[in-house]
Every structure is written in structure tokens, then in C-alpha cells.
Length: 253
Ligand SMILES: [Ca+2]
Ligand SMILES: [Ca+2]
Ligand SMILES: [Ca+2]
Ligand SMILES: [Ca+2]
Image (cartoon, rainbow, N blue to C red; front, top):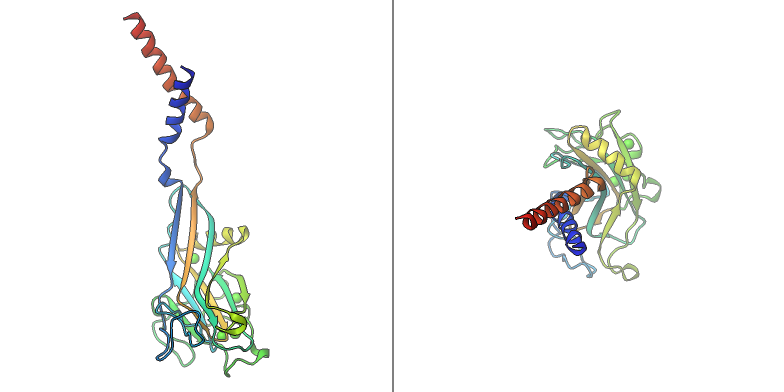
């Protein structure tokens, strides 16, 4: 009998719909530049210049990538987020830095100006530097300065990270996937940016040029309102009660 009650209770737990407990949302940046003619997409060869999903990260520019329809399932909260740059490497062995921000809302444009592109597939770029390579004293974060060409004044803007990459072959480097993982504080900010318009943007300022094979953003969520343990106990007791009543009726009958 005890074993039967245990089985009933276990069954009650197992019959919960497991699929709604966690979810993953994935957003892929549109490819904006393929690798060059006569170059290779082989990540460990010195003439690697990116793959077919390449998002152009040219040192002369700063970029925004905005996307909408960011729908967090009802009753869920965000529990994790990552931003991955696939097969990334620097274009040469000079000093370099990639600056990345998360934005509530990027500006969007229907036509180009002399120093800014029109917005295509949510992507806009602005000329933020000259010289090849960018002189060391000009390697600086566009989104930390006057970024009004790409970001509307007064809208949310959070610095995520900055870092350097080697050229393929430099110190034995192979173009590898780099994944940035959001902190708890950044997850809370991400939530508020999504709530404001169901959209989100990233700001990328490459100083210098980085080859890659695409940028992918992933959000993981979990159901917040799970049945409380007392509910489960009641459910188990209810099933046991039904069993006992049935036994009693069988005995009487
Ligand atoms: Ca730049
Ligand atoms: Ca937003
Ligand atoms: Ca810059
Ligand atoms: Ca800023």
C-alpha cells in the first residue's frame, strides 16, 4: 500500500507538463559581408577572412543591430542570455578592441547620409574612425562617447564588454567562437529593454576589423509560477483518498 501511494505521488509529479518550464529564444544577426575573394573560410588558415554568415565588423565603423518580436513566454522570467561571435579573429596583428553595448532602442533610417548607412535588416553603420589600422590612441568606444548618430538621446544603453582578438596564426590562434554571458544585473536590464517595445538592439564598435562567421544572441527563460509543494501533497492525498474509497467500496460490495 505504501509503495502504491508513493507510485501515485510520483505519477502526479511526472504528469506535470515539462515543456513549459523552460524555453530558449535565439536571434541571429543578418549576414552583411561574405569573406573576400581568394580568401578562405577555414578558421585555422592564415588567409581566413570570415564565413558565409559574416556580420561586417570594419574598424572604420560602429554598428547597431536591432530586432523586434522579442516575446518572453507568459509566466516566464529571463534566467540567462549569451552573445556569441562565431569564428572571430582580428584581421592583422595590430592592437585592437571590440566594444559591445546593449541598447533599448537603436535609431532607424530610411536613407543614407555621407557618414551613415540606411538601416537594412535592422543594421545601421556609422563612420567613427579613419586610418588603417586605427591608431592606438584612437581605439575608443563609440557608444561610450557621443553616439547620437545611432542611439536616440536618453534611451537605455548598457556597456556589456570589450576585448581583443588575435589574428589567425598569431601565437597559434585559430578563429574560435567567443561567447559572452550576461551577469544577473545585465539580465534585469535586458528584461526592462525588452518590455519597452518588445525590441532590443546591440551596439558594436570594432577597432580594428574582425573576421567572423555570424553573431547569435540567445535568451533562456524559466516558468516563474510553478505549482507549490502543498498543491502536490494535496493532489497526492486526493489520489490516495480515491484509492482508499475504491478499496472500501470493493470490500463492502
Ligand atoms: Ca570602429
Ligand atoms: Ca526596447
Ligand atoms: Ca571606435
Ligand atoms: Ca552610450
